[in-house]
Amino acid sequence: MKKQSTLAILSGFLILSACQPNKQAPETDTASESLDMIDEVDDLAQHTADDTPVESNCIFDDDYYGLTTEWAEQSGLTNYRWDSLDQRLLIPYEGDTLLITKGGCDHFGISVQLRLYQDTTSMTQPNTWVIRSMELAQLLNYVQYTQVLSGINDPALYEESGVYFIDIPDDNTEDNQYYTGIKIESFDEYTALSFGSYIN
Image 1 (spheres, rainbow, N blue to C red):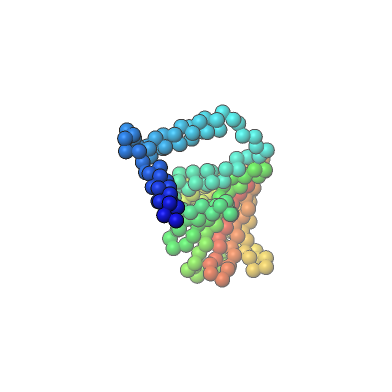
Image 2 (cartoon, rainbow, N blue to C red):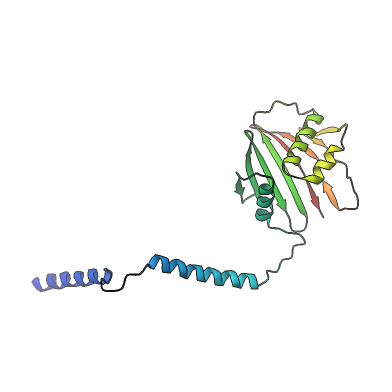
């Protein structure tokens, strides 16, 4: 019995001594070496990725994240959160939330939605909604939409199942760009003002 305990203790010491760092080995910065190795692997992976073209069946650029974040940052909007499920940015904006997305595969789309939480504007005031849409388009440097909205003098508002719409006339039928119009919809917690465009 004494022999077994002595063997167990000796075995324990051997295991512990094997786990201890070798005190006679020269000191090295293993964390730094590990990072260098990771960087080399990353460089190699990046180099390989850059050399290998990625096949895409898309007609347009479907890098929603890249296009949308670049668009926001070029517009001076840097405080945002990416919604990967819906492929859009959520941006706090004057107590409300601005949601934007840009990109596409078969169709290239630009979409803007402002969720108004404290707004008391009547849903049936088309001029107010056009002005708000134009302000957002200007904020986002959405030049085409700003130009189209500036040409609307007497916007026609129509309602369909509690949702209000303002049609946006096509300013150039040959450019293959279509405007979705302005949509105003009321939800329990907010009113949504939406507009956008797409290219086929």
